[in-house]
Length: 112
Image 1 (cartoon, helix red, strand yellow):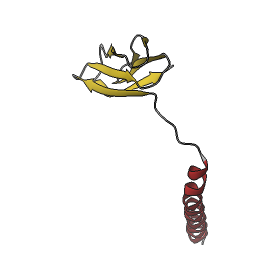
Image 2 (tube, rainbow, N blue to C red; image 1 turned 180 degrees about the vertical axis):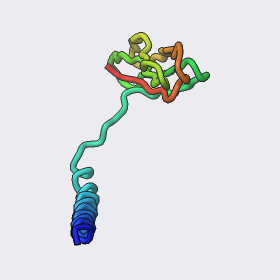
Image 3 (cartoon, one colour; image 1 turned 135 degrees about the vertical axis):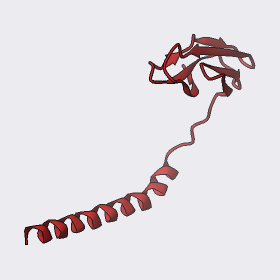
């Protein structure tokens, strides 16, 4: 008897959770449409050789922008490269190295 009650309670909780997830999914497009589009001021390409991650960026604006590479390292602390300052239309790169662990997991850049 106790097992049946627990199974029934679990089934009801599962149905309620699924219903909540469906309601959240249905509401997501409406809230996403209300948010303004985020425009990247830099055009960047990222590369890795397995240990080093590089971000090569070009400034697409009429103002000066700083950026640096961010590298996620497997089984090792994540790394960030040095900040680079780009004048309008200029191009430069920033790189960081995973000195240990399993190497680079992903490479991205941070604008600032």
